[in-house]
Each structure stands twice: as structure tokens, then as C-alpha cells.
Length: 136
Image (cartoon, rainbow, N blue to C red; front, side, top):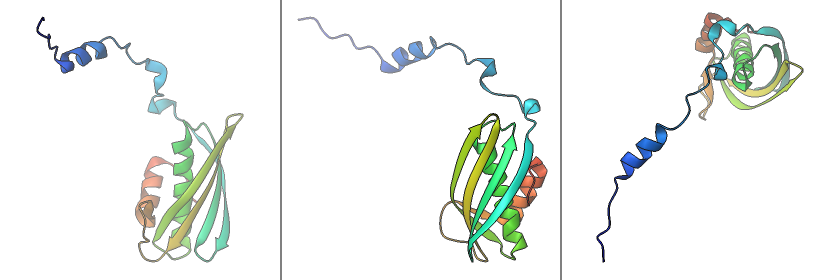
């Protein structure tokens, strides 16, 4: 019986990785090409601390841009109401004919709420302004 030949797995995987085609340059848009048009924010108070934000924009690169727009609206609204924090509950995003729409729901509170998707409203509004994302 012949002895088994052991081939290092790492070398085999490294060889396969080098066969992969390079990523296409058009896979990601450069930042210069990002020229969004923010078309508006509608705010609906659902309960004392539960708020829905409907946002609309054109030129989004994808869902995260719409989510950022809604987050900026939520942060500013939180400050307007005299609170300091918000917690993201959900965001639904749809695109049709180049127009992106987001429907986001947040809770707002004076104290840092429990959960992992919380935002400090002051910090977030400042960040939104630096990125050129409008708030309410």
C-alpha cells in the first residue's frame, strides 16, 4: 500500500484565490458621482414616544443612503421634542423609477434607551450636517 500524500490545504486555497477575476471597477460608485436629491421628510407621531418618518430621495446609491436620511430626520426631530436619544425600530425602503422612499419608525426618549440601534441625537445631527444630509 502506498503512503498517502498530504497536500497543505492552505496552499491549495491560496492557489484557488489567485484564479479569481479582479473586481470590476464599476462595482462601486466613486464619491464624486454621489449627488443625491433629498425630496422631503414627513413626520407622523404615532404615540408620545413613537414616531414614523417618511423620506423620499433621488440619486441614492442604495438602501443605506435612504436609511441615513431617515436617521438624520429622526435625530433632529428628537432634539426638537426636547429629547436626547432615539432607538431605531425598523425601516422599509422601496425604489421606483429612480425615486427612493423610506418608512422608518423610531422611539424617542430623554435617557439612553435599551437596545443596540440607539442614536445620540446631538452627535447624529452634527454628523448629518457634515455629510450634507438634511434634517427636518
